[in-house]
Structures are given as structure tokens and as C-alpha cells.
Length: 120
Image (tube, rainbow, N blue to C red; front, side, top):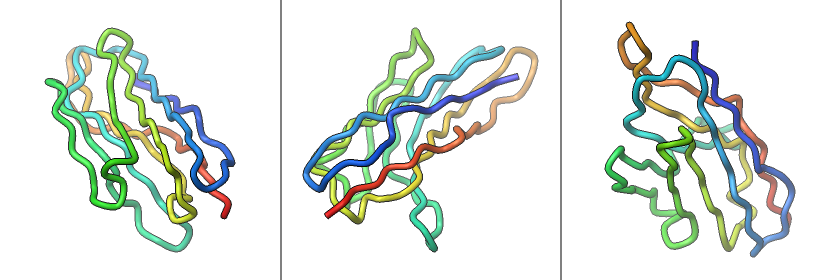
């Protein structure tokens, strides 16, 4: 069994910063790609950023230069540092990890989501 727990969301004024964390626990053999997604009210869930097992990162255009994704492989954690936050960044943020468990195929796992609210 694998569990993902997120933390770090909250209410912040425009221009502020937040740091999201996601930790995976359970029968984990390896974790390849890690990512963050977000879902705003009335909208579909969308990709924000990804980081490969080798540390290569990708970002969607709206967050480039403001958000930074990173990972700690020893602790099975992924982070999202969010700076210069804007009201349009308001959403529930989800971590997504591609995990191989012992004796099973690899698949995607999702965190429970953490609310980020940016006030103007």
C-alpha cells in the first residue's frame, strides 16, 4: 500500500509565497516521475510542473519563473516552491508520483490535495 500526504497550502496575499510538500510512504521500490497538478473551481485538473528521476524539470507557461519543483529521493518527497503568487493560482494542488511497489507494476498515485488561496 502507498499513501501520499501533502502539506503547505494556505491563504496568502498576491505576491506572496508558499511551499508545498508531498511525502510518499508504503511498500515503495522506486519512484520515477513526480509532478504537481492543480484544479481551480469549475475547471479541469491541469499539470503545473514535473520532475524526472534524474532531476529534469518542466513547467507550464503560466508558472515559469515563479514556481520551482524539487525532490528528495531519500525521503520520497516532492516540493513545489511558489513565489510571486497571483489570484489565478488559487486552486487545490495535488501531487502525483509514478511509483513502483514491491511485487507490483508501477502506476500513478495521487495526494489528497491541498488548498492554495491567493487574495488580491
